[in-house]
Image (cartoon, rainbow, N blue to C red; front, side, top):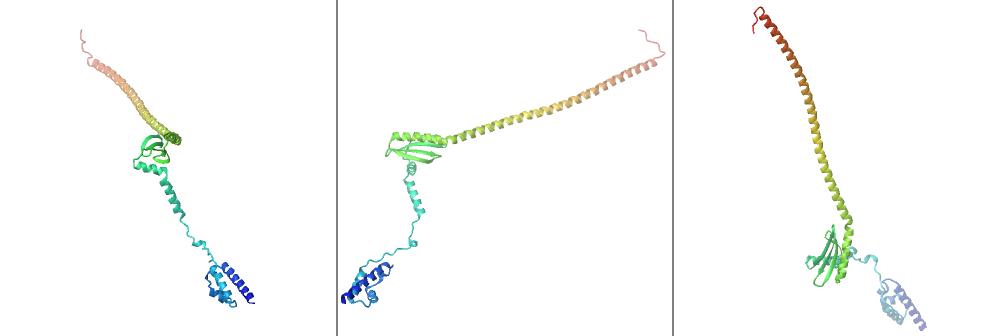
Amino acid sequence: MRNFSRMRGTALAALVVIGGIGMVGCAGAQSAADVASATPSLSAPAVAASAAVVAAAPAPVVALPAATTIAPDQSASATTSDDTKEAQGNVAELRRLMRNNELTELRTSYNGSYGASLLLHGDDLTYYIALFQQKNFWRVIKTHDDARAEQIYADFVKKSAQLADVELRRAKLAAQKTYTERQIAAQQARADRLQADLDVAHQQQTLFASRQKETREEAAALDMQKRAAQDQLRDLRRQVQSLQRETEQGLPHSIH
């Protein structure tokens, strides 16, 4: 009977322990006295065994809610990462060396606003090959192999020429357009001058024709006046001769 009581107490204690492990935060807070009070019918050895089992049971792991997790600032980390890459990149390195006047410019080729440069850092014999547009670096390659540096530079020169092709064509077309517009303006100015000369000539011709007409009319009038005066003169001479004869009528004629 005593053995049966012990077995029942042990089994009940095991059930209590199993139930305590499944609870969140409750089993770990129970003490041996709580177990004893919860099972008053158990004998002292059973209670002690139960308390020992509870004390030996590992504390349950309580998961924190998702809301309590503090996420890092992704934008700030991304910015920091980009800045780090930029600071450690060839472009930033080349700019730093140029600011410090630590580079020797070996070659530079321009195609419009694009260009390529081959530079040498003499301290460690490092070649920097840059492809740029309006002094802004697009690509920067560095190498210790001078032959490879020359090859990359030649390739960048070709790329700058390809990139500048449309730009150069646009510049040529713009220059041709400006030249054509200037030619148009010059021809228009010449046409305006010739038209002005023609307008003056037409005006003068009109005036000349008008003056010629007036002169002809005046000449005709003067001719008529002259003829009238001549007729009048002849009439007056005849009248004078008639009067002379009448005056000398009855007088002896002069003998020659």
